[in-house]
Image 1 (cartoon, helix red, strand yellow):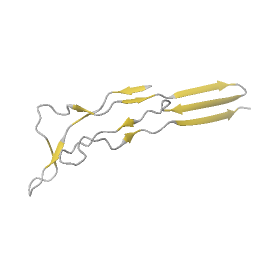
Image 2 (cartoon, helix red, strand yellow):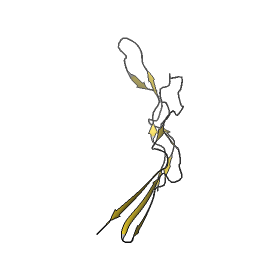
Image 3 (cartoon, rainbow, N blue to C red):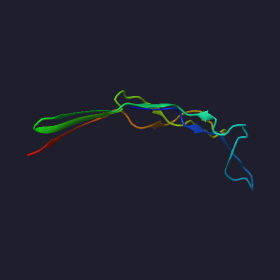
Image 4 (cartoon, rainbow, N blue to C red):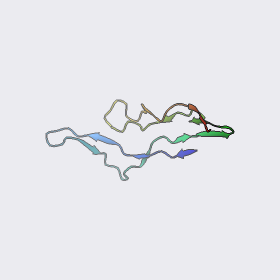
Length: 100
């Protein structure tokens, strides 16, 4: 099982002009004071040993969608929106090993 609180991030605003190329943090009292979405993931593994070894693994058992970080460019049209996910959907795999 994996449970994480949201990662901290700052809000940026692009600075335009002849001598101001790049990004500048907005002037807030605290840095990295915002938090992204939290993440949850449950993985399961089942194995059985008989004349052969069998193993079944399930990743992201509850099929939870973990959201990515929100847009942090203050001048962007999508400011504050989440447009990506982290991790993947539920995945299952089965393996067998014969020993003789």
